[in-house]
Length: 229
Image (cartoon, rainbow, N blue to C red; front, side, top):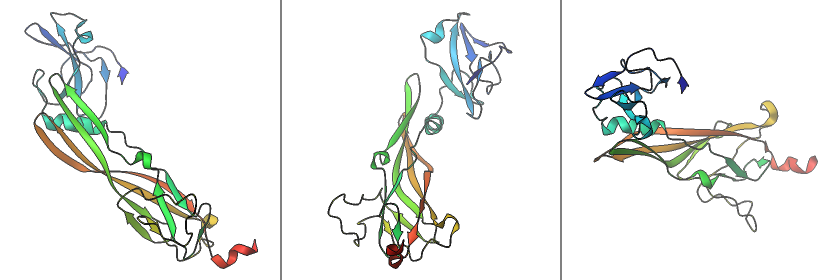
Protein backbone atom coordinates (compact mmCIF):
# COMPACT_ATOMS: atom_id res chain seq x y z
CA UNK A 1 0.00 0.00 0.00
CA UNK A 2 1.51 3.38 -1.03
CA UNK A 3 0.56 6.92 -0.04
CA UNK A 4 -0.73 9.26 -2.77
CA UNK A 5 -2.14 12.80 -2.95
CA UNK A 6 -5.70 13.74 -2.04
CA UNK A 7 -7.29 14.26 -5.45
CA UNK A 8 -11.04 13.87 -4.76
CA UNK A 9 -13.45 15.25 -2.22
CA UNK A 10 -14.97 12.78 0.29
CA UNK A 11 -18.66 11.93 0.09
CA UNK A 12 -20.78 13.23 2.96
CA UNK A 13 -23.76 11.29 4.32
CA UNK A 14 -25.46 13.34 7.03
CA UNK A 15 -22.71 14.15 9.51
CA UNK A 16 -20.48 11.28 8.29
CA UNK A 17 -17.80 11.71 5.68
CA UNK A 18 -16.54 8.52 3.98
CA UNK A 19 -12.85 8.79 3.19
CA UNK A 20 -11.42 6.30 0.73
CA UNK A 21 -8.16 4.50 1.39
CA UNK A 22 -7.86 3.27 -2.22
CA UNK A 23 -8.35 4.50 -5.74
CA UNK A 24 -10.65 1.57 -6.54
CA UNK A 25 -13.83 3.31 -5.40
CA UNK A 26 -15.08 6.19 -7.61
CA UNK A 27 -15.65 8.67 -4.78
CA UNK A 28 -13.75 9.74 -1.70
CA UNK A 29 -10.48 11.44 -0.84
CA UNK A 30 -7.76 9.11 -2.01
CA UNK A 31 -5.17 8.33 0.63
CA UNK A 32 -3.57 5.12 -0.65
CA UNK A 33 -3.78 2.48 -3.34
CA UNK A 34 -4.17 -1.32 -3.09
CA UNK A 35 -4.29 -2.66 -6.66
CA UNK A 36 -6.21 -5.79 -7.59
CA UNK A 37 -8.40 -5.98 -4.48
CA UNK A 38 -11.78 -5.39 -6.15
CA UNK A 39 -12.75 -2.72 -3.66
CA UNK A 40 -11.28 -0.47 -1.03
CA UNK A 41 -10.84 0.23 2.67
CA UNK A 42 -12.75 3.26 3.98
CA UNK A 43 -12.63 5.12 7.27
CA UNK A 44 -15.23 7.34 8.90
CA UNK A 45 -14.89 11.07 9.39
CA UNK A 46 -17.72 12.55 11.42
CA UNK A 47 -18.48 16.23 11.02
CA UNK A 48 -15.25 16.85 9.13
CA UNK A 49 -13.10 15.35 11.87
CA UNK A 50 -9.82 13.62 11.16
CA UNK A 51 -9.41 11.48 14.30
CA UNK A 52 -12.24 8.99 13.76
CA UNK A 53 -10.00 6.38 12.10
CA UNK A 54 -8.17 6.07 15.40
CA UNK A 55 -11.34 4.86 17.13
CA UNK A 56 -13.28 3.02 14.41
CA UNK A 57 -11.85 0.24 12.26
CA UNK A 58 -11.59 0.75 8.48
CA UNK A 59 -14.49 -0.74 6.49
CA UNK A 60 -13.98 -2.82 3.33
CA UNK A 61 -16.34 -1.65 0.54
CA UNK A 62 -16.31 -3.69 -2.71
CA UNK A 63 -16.35 -1.84 -6.02
CA UNK A 64 -19.88 -0.73 -6.93
CA UNK A 65 -21.27 -0.93 -3.41
CA UNK A 66 -22.66 2.20 -1.75
CA UNK A 67 -20.70 3.38 1.30
CA UNK A 68 -22.62 2.47 4.42
CA UNK A 69 -23.91 -0.85 3.06
CA UNK A 70 -22.38 -3.89 4.74
CA UNK A 71 -20.42 -6.27 2.48
CA UNK A 72 -21.93 -9.69 1.92
CA UNK A 73 -20.43 -12.82 3.57
CA UNK A 74 -19.28 -13.94 0.12
CA UNK A 75 -17.39 -10.69 -0.42
CA UNK A 76 -15.70 -10.98 2.95
CA UNK A 77 -14.88 -14.61 2.17
CA UNK A 78 -13.08 -13.52 -1.00
CA UNK A 79 -11.07 -11.05 1.03
CA UNK A 80 -10.20 -13.68 3.65
CA UNK A 81 -9.11 -16.12 0.94
CA UNK A 82 -6.73 -13.53 -0.53
CA UNK A 83 -5.09 -13.24 2.90
CA UNK A 84 -4.27 -16.95 3.24
CA UNK A 85 -0.54 -17.63 3.45
CA UNK A 86 0.27 -21.25 2.69
CA UNK A 87 3.68 -22.78 3.40
CA UNK A 88 5.97 -24.12 0.70
CA UNK A 89 6.53 -27.87 1.12
CA UNK A 90 9.97 -29.15 2.14
CA UNK A 91 10.88 -32.45 0.44
CA UNK A 92 12.74 -35.29 2.17
CA UNK A 93 13.52 -38.83 0.98
CA UNK A 94 15.33 -42.04 1.83
CA UNK A 95 17.82 -43.31 0.80
CA UNK A 96 19.45 -39.92 1.34
CA UNK A 97 21.80 -38.53 -1.28
CA UNK A 98 21.39 -41.26 -3.90
CA UNK A 99 18.45 -43.44 -4.90
CA UNK A 100 18.82 -46.94 -6.30
CA UNK A 101 17.04 -48.48 -9.25
CA UNK A 102 14.38 -50.98 -8.10
CA UNK A 103 14.91 -50.08 -4.43
CA UNK A 104 11.86 -48.40 -2.80
CA UNK A 105 12.30 -44.67 -2.18
CA UNK A 106 10.46 -43.19 0.79
CA UNK A 107 9.02 -39.73 0.17
CA UNK A 108 7.74 -37.29 2.75
CA UNK A 109 7.22 -33.61 3.47
CA UNK A 110 7.97 -31.60 6.57
CA UNK A 111 5.07 -32.51 8.86
CA UNK A 112 5.03 -29.04 10.44
CA UNK A 113 3.45 -27.65 7.28
CA UNK A 114 0.71 -30.30 7.19
CA UNK A 115 -1.88 -28.36 9.14
CA UNK A 116 -4.86 -26.13 8.41
CA UNK A 117 -4.23 -22.41 7.85
CA UNK A 118 -6.88 -19.70 8.36
CA UNK A 119 -7.41 -16.01 7.64
CA UNK A 120 -10.27 -13.74 8.70
CA UNK A 121 -11.79 -10.67 7.08
CA UNK A 122 -13.96 -8.41 9.22
CA UNK A 123 -16.04 -5.28 9.23
CA UNK A 124 -17.77 -4.00 12.37
CA UNK A 125 -20.11 -6.72 13.58
CA UNK A 126 -19.30 -9.25 10.83
CA UNK A 127 -16.39 -11.69 10.42
CA UNK A 128 -15.77 -14.42 7.87
CA UNK A 129 -12.93 -16.95 8.10
CA UNK A 130 -11.39 -18.85 5.19
CA UNK A 131 -9.59 -22.10 6.06
CA UNK A 132 -7.15 -24.04 3.88
CA UNK A 133 -6.70 -27.74 4.69
CA UNK A 134 -4.05 -29.92 2.99
CA UNK A 135 -5.64 -32.99 1.41
CA UNK A 136 -3.11 -34.73 -0.85
CA UNK A 137 0.28 -34.53 -2.56
CA UNK A 138 0.93 -35.12 -6.26
CA UNK A 139 4.49 -36.23 -7.06
CA UNK A 140 6.07 -35.97 -10.52
CA UNK A 141 9.30 -37.92 -10.29
CA UNK A 142 11.25 -36.66 -13.30
CA UNK A 143 11.68 -40.06 -14.95
CA UNK A 144 8.20 -40.04 -16.49
CA UNK A 145 6.50 -41.56 -13.46
CA UNK A 146 4.07 -40.06 -10.95
CA UNK A 147 2.52 -40.99 -7.64
CA UNK A 148 -0.09 -39.51 -5.29
CA UNK A 149 -0.19 -39.58 -1.50
CA UNK A 150 -3.08 -38.82 0.83
CA UNK A 151 -0.82 -37.25 3.43
CA UNK A 152 2.68 -35.86 3.96
CA UNK A 153 4.31 -39.29 4.03
CA UNK A 154 6.20 -41.15 6.74
CA UNK A 155 9.87 -40.40 7.51
CA UNK A 156 12.20 -43.39 7.22
CA UNK A 157 13.05 -44.76 10.69
CA UNK A 158 16.32 -43.33 11.98
CA UNK A 159 17.31 -46.67 13.53
CA UNK A 160 16.47 -50.20 12.52
CA UNK A 161 14.66 -49.50 9.27
CA UNK A 162 14.72 -52.15 6.53
CA UNK A 163 16.35 -50.52 3.46
CA UNK A 164 14.31 -52.79 1.16
CA UNK A 165 10.96 -52.02 2.79
CA UNK A 166 8.50 -49.76 1.00
CA UNK A 167 7.01 -46.69 2.66
CA UNK A 168 3.66 -47.44 4.30
CA UNK A 169 1.94 -44.46 2.71
CA UNK A 170 4.11 -42.46 0.28
CA UNK A 171 6.85 -43.94 -1.86
CA UNK A 172 8.15 -44.57 -5.35
CA UNK A 173 10.47 -47.01 -7.10
CA UNK A 174 12.70 -45.76 -9.89
CA UNK A 175 13.00 -48.17 -12.81
CA UNK A 176 15.98 -46.61 -14.59
CA UNK A 177 19.16 -44.71 -13.83
CA UNK A 178 19.43 -40.93 -14.10
CA UNK A 179 22.94 -41.19 -15.62
CA UNK A 180 21.75 -40.17 -19.10
CA UNK A 181 19.85 -37.06 -17.94
CA UNK A 182 21.28 -33.51 -17.66
CA UNK A 183 23.23 -33.25 -14.42
CA UNK A 184 22.72 -37.01 -13.96
CA UNK A 185 19.67 -36.28 -11.84
CA UNK A 186 15.90 -36.44 -12.15
CA UNK A 187 14.07 -33.27 -11.13
CA UNK A 188 11.07 -34.31 -9.05
CA UNK A 189 8.28 -32.05 -7.81
CA UNK A 190 5.70 -32.29 -5.04
CA UNK A 191 2.42 -30.34 -5.28
CA UNK A 192 0.24 -30.03 -2.16
CA UNK A 193 -3.48 -29.61 -2.77
CA UNK A 194 -5.37 -27.44 -0.27
CA UNK A 195 -9.16 -27.54 0.19
CA UNK A 196 -10.53 -24.03 0.81
CA UNK A 197 -13.71 -23.50 2.84
CA UNK A 198 -15.17 -20.43 4.49
CA UNK A 199 -17.76 -19.71 7.17
CA UNK A 200 -19.16 -16.71 9.00
CA UNK A 201 -22.10 -14.32 9.25
CA UNK A 202 -24.51 -17.26 9.13
CA UNK A 203 -23.21 -18.53 5.77
CA UNK A 204 -20.61 -20.97 4.48
CA UNK A 205 -19.11 -22.12 1.21
CA UNK A 206 -16.03 -23.34 -0.63
CA UNK A 207 -13.51 -22.05 -3.15
CA UNK A 208 -11.49 -23.95 -5.77
CA UNK A 209 -8.45 -25.74 -4.39
CA UNK A 210 -5.16 -23.92 -3.96
CA UNK A 211 -1.75 -25.56 -4.45
CA UNK A 212 1.82 -25.10 -3.24
CA UNK A 213 4.83 -26.81 -4.85
CA UNK A 214 8.50 -27.56 -4.40
CA UNK A 215 11.11 -29.51 -6.35
CA UNK A 216 14.16 -31.63 -5.60
CA UNK A 217 16.87 -33.38 -7.64
CA UNK A 218 17.29 -37.16 -7.35
CA UNK A 219 20.39 -39.01 -8.48
CA UNK A 220 19.44 -42.58 -9.27
CA UNK A 221 22.11 -45.27 -9.78
CA UNK A 222 22.16 -48.90 -10.75
CA UNK A 223 22.77 -51.03 -7.65
CA UNK A 224 25.60 -53.04 -9.21
CA UNK A 225 27.61 -49.87 -9.98
CA UNK A 226 27.85 -48.70 -6.37
CA UNK A 227 31.05 -50.56 -5.49
CA UNK A 228 33.13 -49.27 -8.41
CA UNK A 229 33.68 -45.67 -7.55
